[in-house]
Image 1 (tube, rainbow, N blue to C red):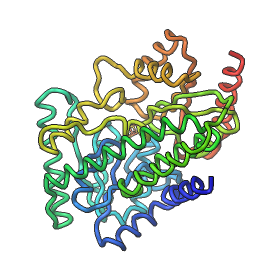
Image 2: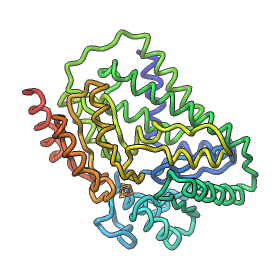
Image 3: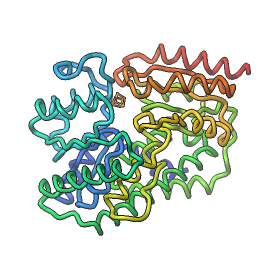
Length: 378
Ligand code: SF4
């Protein structure tokens, strides 16, 4: 247990002080740190250039200045990112990459260029028709532009070979985190909902090779222990993210155990590997073509609900919690279909609206408590 506590402490340190991780990397290597806005930035290109990609997903803060660029009905993740950027919190970053998946991200990409002069913003436009050859070829070209921008920023060449090596490291990381999420189901008392989230999130602020080693050690320490018995209500989380922190704190209090997720902040990052075959940039473009069940990736067949229903069956989950990021249009458009399909499959679900800046957990508490009571009487 001591070893597990030590690993978790190291991960928590990265989550609590991402700025420290950025400064430490720059001091050790003298190289650039690149912020990656949500989601599907081809981090392998950045990594192959000897730079550190880190996740930029906002955080809890008071929104004071960013109203100049984003209205109050923009999602709170982007309002927080713009707020932090305007306050200079990201000034240690050498650049940010903004994938323009939704209207709010499109606004951020453009507003950043006007409002944040200290940190360059490299925008990426993803094709909606992502599976056909022209979509893949277009995205390959977008990634080539990104490679050139990163080369000119760093003054170093980013070779195909280096990108292929980075893909190996990233695919290994994805495989390891997937294993962690499976193993964690057997240890719900040690790996609580908050700790599960923290383990995954810490990967945003560490070198992926180092994070893979840490997670592998954690898995082997866990496996050395007997599986833990829990009478908790097993749930799957779906949505963009499960923050603010006060949200997952409630899971312990009301005996909810996370047995799987479909969060953009978590499993959507690592459930799709980069496929083999072709040039490394084509491979990265084909990963986008292979993404399934994500509200940001166009799917005329809307298979997200079926994926979730399968996940419920595989994990033996008792229900699903839809963590709706307030004002997130792509996720809001999916919800009526999810609701209809969950009801048809007789799967209980809770729809809960989240905001990163929520200053009170009381409304969340009432909803979670009500759900837990309802589930325990089924
Ligand atoms: S997808 Fe949703 S949460 Fe993400 S930036 Fe767009 S509106 Fe915000």
